Length: 204
Ligand code: FES
Image (tube, rainbow, N blue to C red; front, side, top):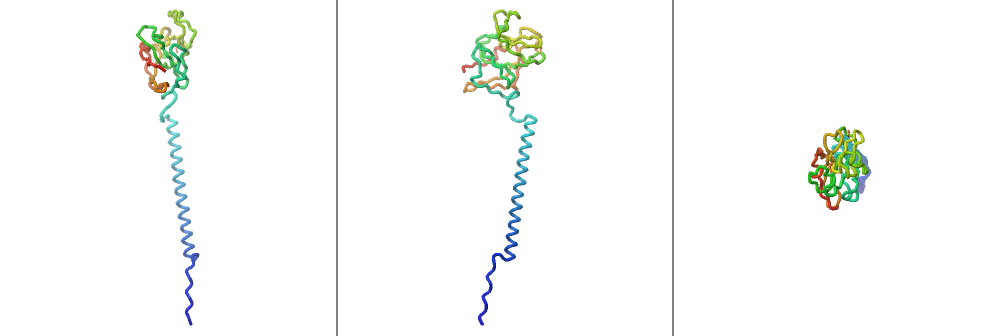
């Protein structure tokens, strides 16, 4: 009598089913592991960004950092100063010796004047109609004048009247090739009668 052929191994036998089940478990574990790591990485990134933002450690922009002023906001020589709120300064374009009321030899250009009064810190506005005759400078109209105690400053920030101990402070300014300017509001220099000499030449 001929021997019966032996049964072919079945792919879905108990050993194969156990192997497949184990493989599925391993895949699930790997997926969970990757998900947990991805979640942790995202959380860490968010915490780092929050920390840097809270303590202002990122490259600052706005007041305290570099403020870019587009060319179309820069006043023409001799025009009214532009108030740059985001940087807390006045951008002045001196025409020649304008503002050099003490004759230190200014030849014009751009000045960024910190609007904080050197006396007690009030914000100093520009008064375009203020007549210098009231502070012994007849013939010059348009001055910075502090509303708190009356300190009065020329277009170049030179103090001519009031209790302020010095002229208005200036901020570092550089001209870019596209005609805009960068004002570093974190680089403030105490005001001095030589303020007009700090003006940066500007040709638009
Ligand atoms: S705070 Fe400006 S004059 Fe006193």
